[in-house]
Image 1 (cartoon, helix red, strand yellow):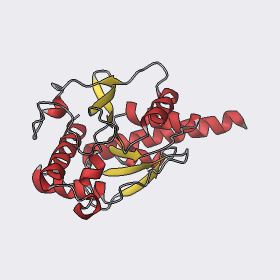
Image 2 (cartoon, helix red, strand yellow):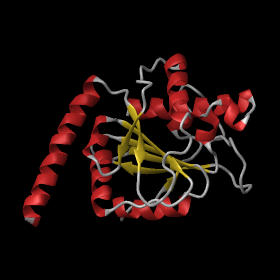
Image 3 (tube, one colour):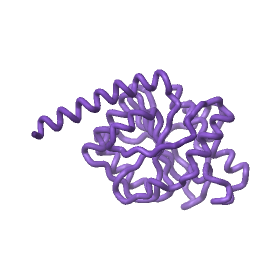
Image 4 (spheres, rainbow, N blue to C red):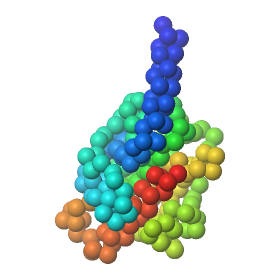
Length: 223
C-alpha cells in the first residue's frame, strides 16, 4: 500500500511537470498565491497581487490574468502557474510532501517570490530547509539583473515600510545558475502594492514598490 501510494504520487507529479512545461511554453503569464500550513496568515495583503498585475500589464506589456487564484503548496495545481507569490507575518510549515512538491515545481521551471510582511523570516528560513536541506539563502547584490531590468534600482531592493530600522534585503535560491526563489525582507513590497487607502503610502513610495514588483515578474517570465 505504501509503495503503491508513493508510485501514484510520483506519477502524478511527473504528469504535472510535463503539463506545466507544456503550459509554460504556450501560456506563461499566470500567477497564483501560495497557501501554506503553520498558522501564518498566507492570505495577507489581498489587494496586493491583483494591483501589481494591473500595473505590470499596463507598464511592461505583460498579459497576466487578473483573476488571481490560490493554490496549496502540497497540491499538483501549483504546476499550472509559472509564478507563485507567498507572504505573511507568522509561522510557516512545509510537510515532507509539501516540501517535495515545491522542490519539484521550482526545479522544473517555476518561480516563487516570498515577501516577508514582517516576522516571517525565522519560520520561513527553517521551512525552506525541508525543501533544500543543502542550500542556504544567498543575498543578492544590488548589481543583480532583477534590480536592473525595465526599472532601475541602483541601490538594490527598495524600502517601502519601516519596522526595525533594518535595511531591506533580497535573498535567493539558485538552480543551475537560475534564480528560482526570491525572498524579500524588511521591504514590505506587498504593502506598497495594496490599495492606496489601506496604508496611505505616498504615491512615489507606492510607485517604487510596483516598479520593483514589475521587475520581479519580468525576471521570472524571462527565465
